[in-house]
Length: 278
Image 1 (cartoon, rainbow, N blue to C red):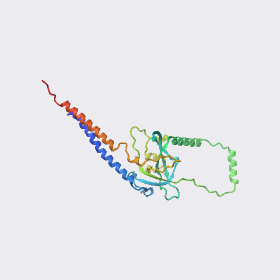
Image 2 (cartoon, rainbow, N blue to C red):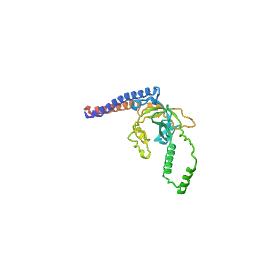
Image 3 (cartoon, rainbow, N blue to C red):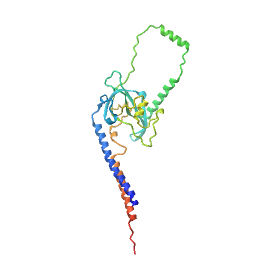
Image 4 (cartoon, helix red, strand yellow):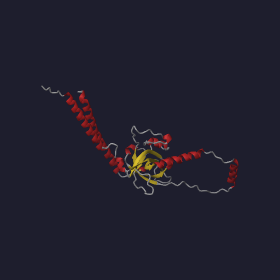
C-alpha cells in the first residue's frame, strides 16, 4: 500500500491548488470592487480606524511633500520599450500645510512611484554634503566677532518681516496599502545605512520621524507631465494582479493530478501479478 502513498499525496496537492485558486479569485474580485469605488477624502477617514480595513480604497490627499525625508526602496526593475532599467520606488511623507484646511491633518507616507537610480545617487550625495558642512568648525576670529557685535548694536532697530518657506501644495490620488511580504530571497532592510529592499510601513514611518501607525498609500495618478516624467506612479491594474494568478493555480492542479495518475499507475503495474507463460 505504501506504493500508492505518492499518488495520494500528489492528488491532495492538486486538490489544494483548486482551493487556493478559488481563494485567489475571491481576493482579486475584492480588490477590483474596492478600486472601482469612488475616492474618499483622507480627512474624512476616522482617526482611530484601522488602515487594514481600508486597504485598496482610493483616497484623495492634499499637502506638501517633505522631500528631505524621502526613502528609496529597491532596486526595482522597469521595462521601457523592451529595455530593462533598474531604479527605485520613492516614498515621501505628505505633510499638512499650515493654514490650509483642505490639506491632510496628519502626515501620510506616499509611494510616488518609480524613479531612475540617479535619483537615489543624487539624494545620497546631497545628504553626505550636508553632513560634511555640519562637521566643518567655525573659523571666525574673535576680533571679527567683536566687530560684528558692535555693528549689530550700533544699527537702528528695523522691523523685518520673516518670510515663511514656500511650499508647493500637491494633490495625490492613491490607494491605501500595507507592508510588503518579502520572499526568503529578499535581504533584510537596514535603516541605519539607508538600505530598503521592501516596504515595511512601521519601520519607514519610524525612520521618517512619524508614528508607526502612519497611513501608507501608493500614488496611481496617471497625469504625468512629459517635461517631468518622474516619478512614474503605479498602474492601478497592477494592484489586482498577484505573483500567482488563478490560471497558474489551474496549471499546478493539472500538473499534480497528472503526476498522481502516473505514480498510481506505476504502483498498480508493480503490484499486478504477472501472468506465467507455459
